[in-house]
Structure formats: structure tokens, C-alpha cells
Amino acid sequence: MQKIMIVEDDPKIAEHLKTHIEKYGYEVTCVMDFEHVMKAFYEITPDLVLLDINLPSFDGYYWCRQIRKESVCPVIFISARIGEMDQVMALENGGDDYITKPFSAEVVMAKIRSQLRRAYGEYAARQKDRVIENAGLTFFPERMELAFASKTVTLSKKEADIIESLMERYPRVAGREDLLEKLWDDQSYVDENTLNVNIARVRKKFQEIGLPDAVETVRGAGYRLNLSWKEEER
Image 1 (tube, rainbow, N blue to C red):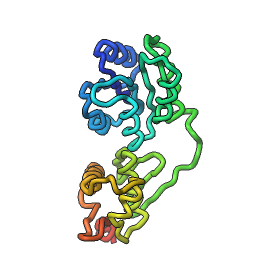
Image 2 (spheres, rainbow, N blue to C red):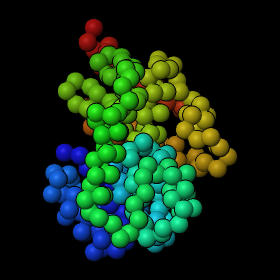
Image 3 (tube, rainbow, N blue to C red):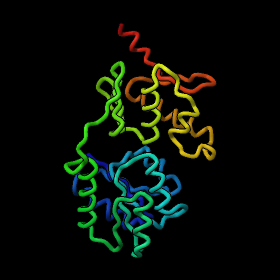
Image 4 (cartoon, one colour):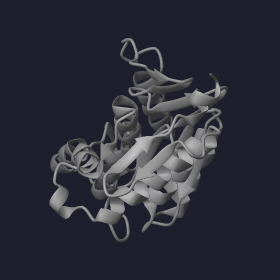
């Protein structure tokens, strides 16, 4: 079942959208903690986001930029702003479509289905996925998926970048500086702890597929993939 995340601060509109979209068989979650939208995004891992512009704390443009750092899932803005520049800003900040309020629920559904088809279905780009594989561990960079045995997990953009570096460099170490350069264009504004947080998330993903010790810390250097189960199979 595909998942839709709604970020809308008007509870009546959010509930109206949720009720209507659920009729078509989608799993819908309304986010009401507008200071921690990305926390909800990580937990839900939605296939599509409906995003208002006028939100408490940070506006929808900001949250769309944060989503784009982690995912390429479709983002549809829904807003009472009808100006041409607002729509341009929505697209420039990573949005895929724009719907003005008041809206027709059927038009919203049509746009949702269209974006899902383009991203995942019959209109999705037809290209052969890259596959990086070692010792039964399989990574699909374009899909942002990691698989081992019969288990598969979906990754955020940064998690996928880290795992790609670890797998491509194995058995060498992926240096901290190299990882920071791959993940962020401007390292001078990145807190050192940010990488630690992302490595912790990567370790959690490996744990979900049954490999809790897959990422090894090399003190003073960086991180290395630990394929100890590969040796055990010999």
C-alpha cells in the first residue's frame, strides 16, 4: 500500500484530504508537529507528500528543501497562495506540482495518481538499475534500497550515499572527510556530529536486515564495511 504524508496546519482540510484519499486505498498520515516534519518523514517514509506553504515555524518551501536532501519522492504543494511567483518558488524549491485552494478533491486525487505513476509506475523512467553486491548484500542506488537474505529496507538519500561509499570502497576505509564531502557540498557549515547521526541511522538500517555489526568504526580514520559473515561462509 502506497503511503501519503499530509503536512497541512488546518485540521479540517487535512482530515478532509485524508478521508478522501483513503477511499482509494492509500495509507495516509497527517503531520501535526510542524517543528519536526522531517522526523515524521523518516518514520513514515512516504511515497508522496502533500505540503502546505503557510506553516508554523518554517514554511513549506523550507520543508520541501529538507525532503529533497533525503528523497526524490513526489511533493505536491497545496496552498491558498495564487500568485505566479508562489508557484515558481514551489517548483524551484523542489516541488513537483502545485494546487491552489479551494481545491477539488478529485483534482487532488488525479494529480496524486499522476505523480505516483511518473515516479513508480507505468510512466517511470525505464532504465536498468545499478546494483552493487557483495557477500549476499545487495544495494540498489537508484531505488535507494538495501537487501540481504529475504529482507529489504528503504533508505533516505544520505543513508544511500553513505552505504554506496562503504560498499564501493570495501575493504578500504571510507574516510570521514570523504563522506562529508559526498554528503554536503559545503562542509564548513556541517556539525561533526551530523555525520555521526547519519552513520547511526545507517547502522539501524543494517540491523533491520539482520546485520547489526555491518559498519565498523576505524578510529581516527572513518568507517568500513564489516562483511564478517562472508568469511564465516567459507
